[in-house]
Image (cartoon, rainbow, N blue to C red; front, side, top):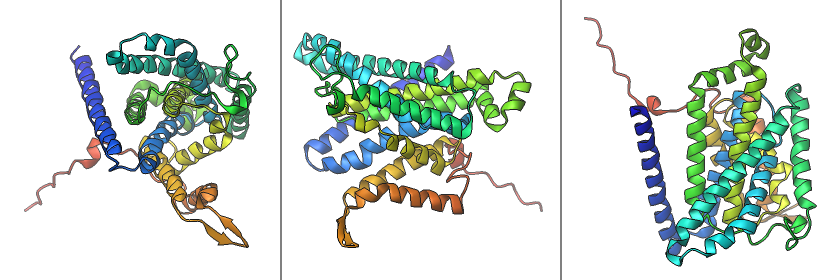
Length: 356
């Protein structure tokens, strides 16, 4: 009982801090003291990718599987939650008085996030079960195919305006923009994803995940149900990816198939590998760092080479590749390896008195 009250207290404090930070960000944006482009580049987008990197780290880094279909889970969550808000919720929200509409929008966005997370978790279950017999490269190819199939399905839905259409290749427009500037919801989801994964790893289930990663045969010999834990990793990782897609859809107001291409999956895998497979801290640092680096390229001036003009942002995948090559040469285990940074890392050790 006492432990549950402490947990509720921590959650309330976290939500309060994030609401205060969101109000401060809104003030800075309204007073133009914070440029909108820089806000999106260095705050909003990194928070989005931190959630994706930490959730994929549960599948690739902690359980030792190799998935290349994370963008497919994001796509499922974004499209289905956007459809729920567009076709069902928007009319209900408009019936509320203007003074309570912000609260109603927040409540319906929360429900949409649950729908996006559950639908993506269902997709993770569908992928996880048939792919359990596959390992390494074969699993990567299977999940890559899954991500592309999902994207193509939504790309070929009927045009928007028809019943239950998703806009097809033109994109699903006019999604209710209930996420505001996106800071609160992206930060809340990133904190929740980090907290769930870290606490999960400290439980007996987390030890089972690690056992599956280190030696699947030995884990089975010790009585661990490896099928269950591999599927569970897919479900949890996909759920958080689907909720990230929900926030993305309701912050941008439009969902397009090109936003969930295989390039996104490769970027997130690169973040997990660079940070250190198995380290949540590494996934956070690499997710935020690589995203900030990618966005910084957009602000750099164009240059001419070999008789043509180049934009630095066009070379971001080249930059990612160079970063990964350097990491593999000088630090093959990633920036953090399997290490984590927590409160204990900042405690100063008391020196033992020297013997007289």
